[in-house]
Amino acid sequence: MSKVVALSALALSLAACTSEPPRAGRAPASAAPSPATDVAPSAGASASAANDTVWLDPAKLERGPVLHERLGEAQVARITRLQAAFAEVEPTPVEKWIDDFRRDRDPDGEIAIWEAMAGAYGTFTGARTLTLDQKKEAFGLLLLRSGASAEEALQRGAPAHLTREDAAALLALYREPPKPIGVTPR
Image 1: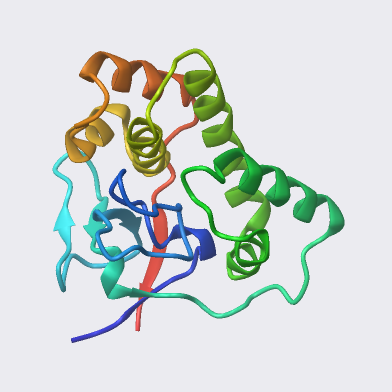
Image 2 (image 1 turned 120 degrees about the horizontal axis):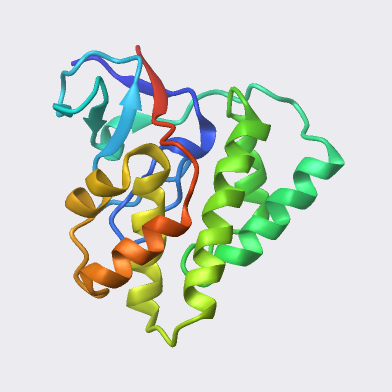
């Protein structure tokens, strides 16, 4: 069986909403499949009928190597704000977030994805009284949405704690086009 390496450091774990689901770098045991490009459908992958996206099980991925020895001061400040925005649902220390972004081909591009997610998450959670499970689910749905259409994120995310209407409203707040994770077979 061939191994797959995520080239996007914070891209390993578009994950199930009630576990520890960051966009990349850290894959929880119960992670949901992640949308990926640049890889043939094999080894636990499923192809999306709508496009060339292949859904991979994050548990079958390996972290990529460090590609950037250091990140700039502005990048670290942005990452620190992201970690704070998601700390309740993704309690990984900021040092780990920074290390994960150092493994990304395009740290600024990945940071921008996370910033769009944080904006949608903050708007959604700030306007509602939500349980921790609902917040985790919102986070997981945004992770899915960052790499797939809103429709596909709703289908694959199958909200259990949020109403379908609330989930659709959340996903509408994320206005960026889907950017599936790029992976390379090893």
